[in-house]
Length: 447
Image (cartoon, rainbow, N blue to C red; front, side):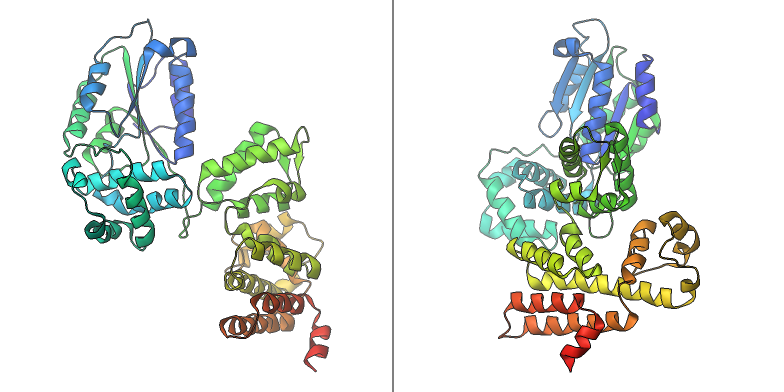
């Protein structure tokens, strides 16, 4: 049956747990849900006897089945927890698994990337014997094909795995078939089978049978085409954490948190924990708090620079430029977000100078903007009402003529950076100063 976490926890609390439960999707969400389920199923004082934990990537089904058929030592429910259950993945998951393995590798999580890599090889039909005979030179290109464009990272991951004591899981679909048998005939009355998985193919016979006979909970987090967490889902997660921490957050601070979020929910959770500790007993989180403590993990790495440019804050923008360059960001990588910001401001300015200008008022609230103006706003302006509202506010600092000229300045800087004889830092500093100057000052310099 399909379910949600709240209803599952409610049933467990009433002493009516599902006999078989599958949790899959985002790693952080799955870990949190597993912990909530275990806290209700098996009290801490009973876990030494009534909870058995297996790693699905290495444990044979024979061991798991034997545990399922053995009554609990103490009275109560016996829970068999199979972590990272591999039975639900199929060849259709290979692209997703390859991308995640490389992402884990780039984040320094080498063992997690290696284990996922072995699952990918298993889906490709690799055996332990084939792995033992592997030759790094002849097999690197074959393995790299599983990872799309990440050939260099795949080669490094392969080299790491060759030096570790990882074992290939036995090939074959017998384990999934035996799990289907359990679903059809039911577990012993004393047992609960809890499985978690990162990758599932909903089209498999096993998954469909699990939805029919057991309980399957999808905790997948949506992502945009760049791989970043979906903004709406991220916003819901942030709001939930704020409620749990009894905190409020300024609108600008909220935008900064969303902009700085990376690709993994667990990392967002860690950063929010740091933020809550930093604020302490204070009920309100301000923009300066986020700026001080929250690690930049997403495209927000350039957010503070574009914010200073929109405010025509020359010293602030130069300071942010120095920070980004000192962190190793290439000047050319900074031009695209700067150009995008100038385009957004230009579109907002043109709307303000047109029909929308009759309704726009610099003293209107974000709610008034959302009701009267936002329905007519489209790309390249932000898709979130408050972010679009802030673009309108910033566009008041410029004329349409200034912003059109600013885009030309960005293009000229791009040419300077790509030609020899122009120190990159000086070229970027010159651009920042020109973008922040009022048009009258620019015209005087041009003359």
